[in-house]
Amino acid sequence: MKKSTFLINKMDCPSEEQMIRMKLESNSQVKYLDFDIPKRKLEVYHSGPVDDIYSSISDLNFGEKLIETREAQVPVKEDENKQKIILWWVLGINFGFFIIEMTTGWISSSMGLVADSLDMLADSIVYALSLFAVGGAVARKKKVARFSGYFQMALAFFGFIEVLRRFFVESELPLYQWMLIISSLALAGNLISLWLITRAKSNEAHMQASAIFTSNDIIVNGGIILAGALVYFLENKWPDLIIGGIVFSIVMRGAVKILKISK
Image (cartoon, rainbow, N blue to C red; front, side, top):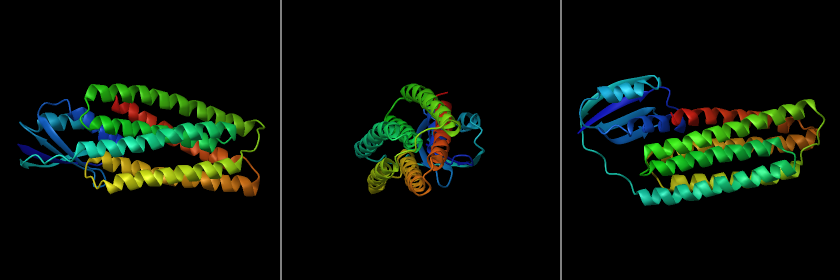
């Protein structure tokens, strides 16, 4: 058995990891993939020459570089059942807050909450793909990625249209109380999710990727709380629309990456 180590310069988030995973998992020579996203490093355990593997990674144009290939033993896999339980909990928390924030966002006229709900939905998709990564088939992951990517993109597009409409048309002031309460609850939910993921102490890439996504969500939740406070002090809808537009752009960017995964 051989281990080839790659430096992937453009692998800086979970989407790139998923794209590489689905590109290589269909290769019968590949036996195990070990990602280190913070260090942008990938170790591929495989039989046969590395040429086909290198070619597959090169197709993605992620600034890849083969560092070395040497003989090695395939690592022992971590407990998949433990990973699945944690990911199901985190998926449930995120999807639950997607419904809560979407509902209260429209009731309170807060585009910030609506946008954050879509960000929660985007994370739910990532966690679902991570669950499929635990023993899942590549074809099934691609179908889920394709459907969810288009769905997420459509929601983000209509969200942008609504933000623009409220910029140029007179509309009611968002209910800052709902913004502060619901975004604080979402922040608590993300903190619990991050605690569950870090408690697993897993070195698996999809678990590390989930931790990165959740950490980013905590920052977004803080932005919604700040926007709610500014709506109160300024008595103006602009802070809500600005944070809503920013989060919608994040969701759209995520949708594009998910669609790339499905190819």
